[in-house]
Length: 217
Ligand code: DX5
Ligand code: ZN
Image (cartoon, rainbow, N blue to C red; front, top):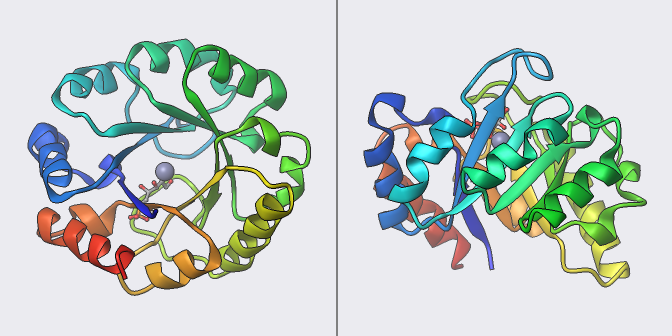
């Protein structure tokens, strides 16, 4: 099952409620929530208080992508604000094992994200403990960047790793994804597809339906 995770980073923040209702109504399953601290990545986006405000208006799976240094400091905040999945960057954690444990102890799903230049080898000792790997297909920090083709091989290798170890781990892919390149990503093994610009740019309902049509093929 392929799932669409629209990234609200590209939504209209003055009209967030309406934009979220549209992606939900159109049939998206996840809501991708990009949290940026201005340190791990250049930009600052928003934090747990904003997420807490939108939690009551949506039944979507709240998929929180923490692009922050030492995210272990904020896990409780995002759990209390209604996160269903919390993904941290391997590069941002001094103690990745401890960070994953804290997320799981808090009762939510745990994901680990890898920047484009980070090797899959960082997963050697944690793949068994997590629910999702997020393969970045752009350098994190901004929406609207171009998809980096190196992600395709990485997804394929990861898919094989998960198969060999007989695990049930989702492969999320994030950055520069649109209806023209998504099929290649799915063929490689991606099953949770993040899209910001390609969903919130233009007709939101039509954009979500276009993705879902490709997913059902
Ligand atoms: C990038 C974010 C992405 C971004 C995706 O740092 O993690 O989730 O919002 O936006 P698009 O789909 O426009 O590349
Ligand atoms: Zn993201």
